[in-house]
Length: 426
Ligand code: ASP
Ligand code: MG
Image (cartoon, rainbow, N blue to C red; front, top):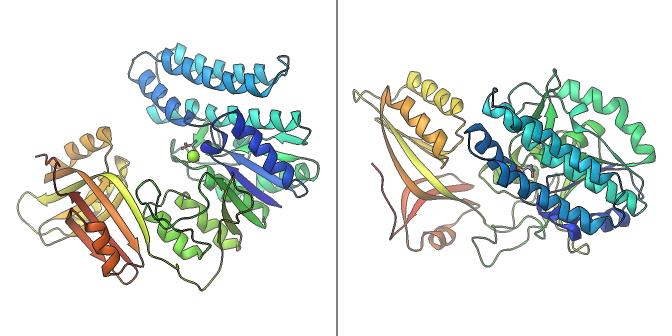
């Protein structure tokens, strides 16, 4: 059996849904679990809605926009207005309505998961209904009955034993008769509260299903031809990497290559399940295959992360940064949910680069300042080159100034700033 994952970009409009059906039709003679993300930018929109609701601002605009967006897709896909899908989607919006009618009583993270997960529930329903309409036997499966997590809302940790038991007990039987359509990104706690697995987590869901079902291969269908050696958003002459080892794939995603969610690869590697990354527009192109191979990357790969903040932490009494301080500092970062992208320590300071997230950074710095002096610089970029050489380093440093650089045999990381026009704060 195989697992297909379709991300938000592949189902951003009615044509996207038709294209999913075309791909499934083409490969339907195999047992298939289809994992889908929310349509287009729905997750961002529901995220904004949740923030507004939590902060007591008006949510109606976000709510209407989300409804209109999905209704438009439904109108285009289903001529028969008595198709039950219209009701199903309306009912999912009622669930959001029920939540936002009342004053927020729960934590932000909990509310976030209850609201934002609706995006995936709706998209998977629409896709199932459309597959049925074009006579592909399909069945909607609620991922929350299979993917079990702890109570860590917004970043649920998967209980693998329980998840594997649930998946194995019923999915193989269901697969004998139907193509299954389920949601990426979501799971549930032992008390049946919905959780999410972290942004872009649908790839991870696909890997969880594949691992528990001993799938042959997982295919992530994308709007790019496969894994490229750089994001075309930042680089002109990108090259497709036809084959990639699990290790290189893990390293690239770890440093921020957004083409695959970082948690996806390990479970697949453990079971020797291949991962294909292919274009959903060009079915003649095999894209990238990630599997066991001794080949290293054929070209240097570049990973860019913009909007970085350098935070430097210095002990107030000019004592050395010692282990006690480190464990405290790491705990503070974890508590404020800031992931460290790069770090460096010297005798008297510890510096890290993190994504700029105003809310979390303000609270982090406030807490750190109780014990340390803290300095920070905004508007930096982090570039990682896997299989770097002098030429590739020079290429990215054109008109840039290096703030911090770390390098080993395989990887070079540079925190850089454009030479002109950058602000320095504090
Ligand atoms: N819809 C979720 C997100 O945008 C999960 C995913 O797309 O993988 O983060
Ligand atoms: Mg996505």
